[in-house]
Image (cartoon, rainbow, N blue to C red; front, side, top):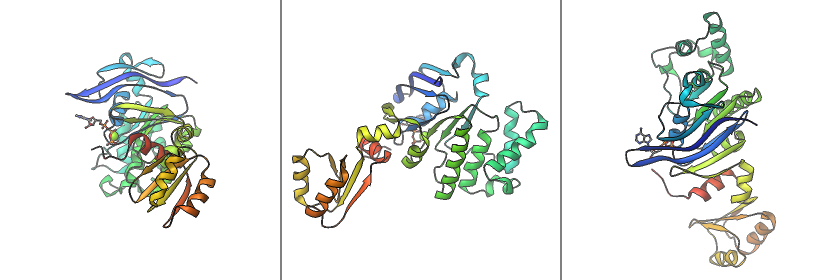
Length: 303
Ligand SMILES: Nc1ncnc2c1ncn2[C@@H]1O[C@H](COP(=O)(O)OP(=O)(O)OP(=O)(O)O)[C@@H](O)[C@H]1O
Ligand SMILES: [Mg+2]
């Protein structure tokens, strides 16, 4: 599969502080590629360099097979962007926001109204088209930002935390819209702090921390490599449990009142723990991308 984005040794500093420290990755045609990492990891800075908003200090960047510095104009015309902040015009209506933004692209005026109408339908905003943006809830604003990013019928969609702050209904609605777009062959670069979202939407992803890439892979490969198939969570663990796990070389994390055990053969170990080592509660569950994320980036707050 050909690369839609190819990033090599991308670097960016703000004064003496390094925001992105020599990262390289490729996004292939038609895939949804995730950029994950704790607050301040460098995701937004990376994304902004990719859509030409923030100049990079060094490194090379090719989009659609073309070196970006020589062809920004034509590259940008094929990219749709949802920034982390909602930068809608608060004084305009929903429809006016789309029509005004469309002026950046040479959309023929006889096509504009139909395109706006179909995007309002696609994002379930058609009944709110006359509403002022100031009156919209956070979820409606995010939907409008997505509609706006699709105005130029992009070949690459860049989404910086598209579902932050949304209720479960709005998140699921947006996920299904993104899945529709993927079916149509759109390539997507996505950042998110919701690991269930990344696990559901991303074909491949990277986890960044402190300006660098820690790992890259499919969600399933990362789960299998860094956690295993199952996780057992034990509330108020008995003192002898640590000893037993260490003796059997089973990996675990001690969070004080809770012990997290990582394993492949979860059922057998779960029964053993339940019988002999747990008084207050023991839960067996499939390992998730969130387990991978926390194992690799730790549990300390970043910012
Ligand atoms: N314009 C700027 N001026 C100075 N420092 C900046 C600027 N933009 C980002 N930074 C710093 O660069 C680092 C990376 O920030 P960035 O916004 O890329 O992180 P992020 O991974 O998107 O975080 P979050 O998950 O909180 O959105 C942070 O330490 C941030 O404070
Ligand atoms: Mg960010």
